[in-house]
Structure formats: C-alpha cells, structure tokens
Length: 345
Image 1 (spheres, rainbow, N blue to C red):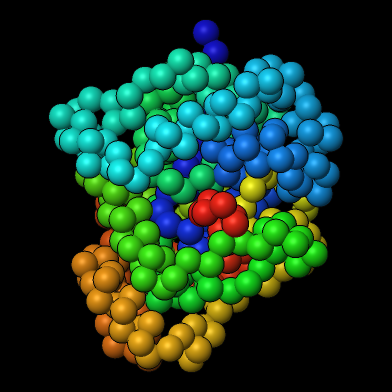
Image 2 (image 1 turned 60 degrees about the vertical axis):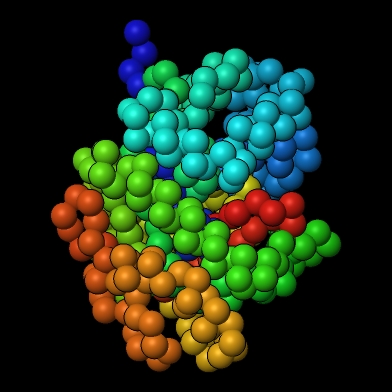
C-alpha cells in the first residue's frame, strides 16, 4: 500500500502571499510547488495557460507525465463540477456538516480523479510534500477528505486594507504582456471575501485539527522572511536548513511547475523579500473606513489595528498551535486574481 501524499494546503483569501510562499517552498528538497491545483482542469488543461516553467501547461514535460494518468478529455466537466460544489452559497451547509463531524463537502464521483491527481504528482515529482496554494477553504476541506491524503493547513493572513488595495491593481493574468486582466473587485467585495474565507478557514481547521494547522501573517513574514519560512518548512515536515536564502531577506529562485497564481511565480534568480506599504498612503480614506468596518471582527482576531498609520504589532496573531503567528506585509508574489474571479496569489 502506498504511503499517503502529504499536502501542505495554503488557505485563506487572495493577495496574502501564497505565491511567494509556494515558490520559496518549492526550492526545498522533497517539495513540489504545485500552485493552485483546483485550477489545473480549467486554467491548465482547457485554457492551456503557462506552467510556472513558462511553457504552456500541455507542453510541459513534467505535467505531460502526470496528465497521462488523468482523464484529460473530461477536464471541462471536472472544472464545472468543482465550481458547482464549491459555491459560496453552500458555506452554511458545509459548516453545519463540519460541526456534526461529517464530511464538509459531500462525496462525488470526481473525487477519485482528484485523489489520482495528487498521487500522480507525488509519484512523478518524487516529492514528500505537495504544496497546493488553492486557498479556497471548501476545496481544502474536499482535499482533506480524499483517500490517500495527509493534509496540513497553512493559513496565510494579510491586513484586509492591503489586500483590498492590491485587488484594485491592474495586471495581466500571466504577466504584463497578457491582454487578459486580473479581476478588480470593488474594495467592499474584497473585504467581505477576506472576512468570509479567513473565518471559514479558522472554523474548519484551527479548533478541530490544531496539530495540522499553522497561521502565518504576511506582515510578519516580510519582517523576518528567513525565520518564518524555516518555521513553515518545519511545519510541512521538510528540512528547514535546506532553503534558498542567500541572506535574511533574499532568496535565489529557480523555475517551478506551479499551476496558476500570481505572475511573479515566473521570477527566477536573486529576489529580495520586501514589504509593500503603498496601500498605507494611497488607499482612500473612504475605502479604508469601509474595509475596516466590514472586517472589524477579523481585525481583532488576527491582531490588526483599526486606526490608520498604526503598524500591526509583530506576532500579534496567535496560531492554534500555540506559537506566534508569522505572516503578512508584502513580498514578491503578492496575490492576484484571474479575470474570471479566481482568487490567486
């Protein structure tokens, strides 16, 4: 019998640093940076968008090996099925099932295909840990219930005012040359998504599975990148000494084979990890007030100040595992969203 596939699932809302964390973790021995695997079927197979290595996904030799074990002729139907099963309107029922201790996302015939996907990825990459940055909590709950999966959840959180500002930036879906733009939801919608996805992530994993849950704030990540990534690597079960750091806040990146995500997943070479604080100056007073009001419960929970210009205290959030939350600010790989409303990065 094959051992279970360990999946490090990056959960939370978009624009919280998942692309950065995924890309850096992908430099460790035994780790495969898969990117947002829930989009493999639509973005990768149907649309044939670029792999992290730069090739169209169907032309990537590694994904070619994986795809041979999958029903790629059914990709569009599988993608549509996932969209239907993971709709936001299904969250109340999902949380009720979770409270009763039953499977949050009901079983479906496509689950066997999803389990085969993770097994094939691990087999063809030789990875001990597969990093899936899909973020959407219902998809994480679905993956955690698949046979042959050992799920660990990394909950990434960033100040909601910063994420709302980041969502409004105009960027190409796969880089500046891409004519298809990422989505730009209004700040109010971005704030509500932040509150919903982060709250659901806590309810699904922080209390029920504390040993398999780690919360990291993006601000703390950019304040102390090397120590924070070492901690994440240890949580994932890989050697924390094997990272790509050439200095406390600089990494040397090689290409990954990530699916979807922020266009910064294509960056290679020496890359500094720095904090983006443009939102503190350029987010309008009205937008700041709106986002603050809508996300007030989450601000208190994750240790973010209400007043403008007051920095979040380092490690103010606490993880369910008892340690200080490391996370947040800005770094290379700020989250982006696809023009079809996909949350990425």
